[in-house]
Structures are given as C-alpha cells and as structure tokens.
Length: 84
Image (cartoon, rainbow, N blue to C red; front, side, top):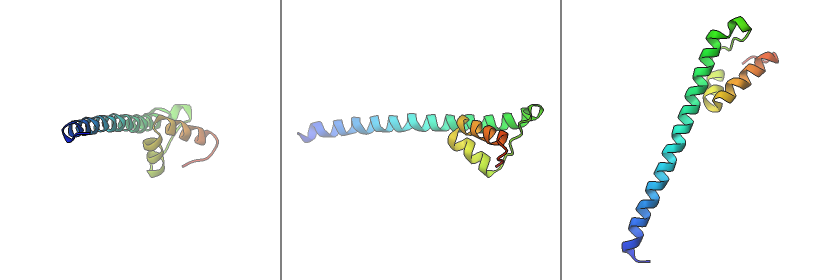
C-alpha cells in the first residue's frame, strides 16, 4: 500500500475510534448521573413508603457504577433486611 493512501486511512480510523469512545463515555456519564439522582430522590421521597437509603460511600458507589440497576439492587437489599 502506498504511503499516500495509508496516512489518510489511518486518520479516518483514528477519528472513528475517537467518536466511538466519546459516545461510550457519554452513555456511562448519563447512567452514573441517573443512578445518583435516583438515589437522592428515593432517599428524600421514599420515607413515607418505608424506603430510606443511606447516602454513604457504598450506596453512592453502587448507584454510580451500576446506575438505576444499582439503586434497584439497594432497594431490594433493604427489603431483604440487608443494609449497606
């Protein structure tokens, strides 16, 4: 392959990889923000329904890493009597 063709193709490949990385980071950021927001909303509005999730390092990590699924897991664990 000629060097004149390889350099533009490599540039296009790097741009495509950068776009894919940005899209995935955006999804991770949105998932984290939704998880932490749900934890705070449930913590403030869930008391009348018997749902009170403490805000500490463990619950924040679970909601930030797992997102809404992490908050759901924390609620299930609370109903089973396992508190974080």
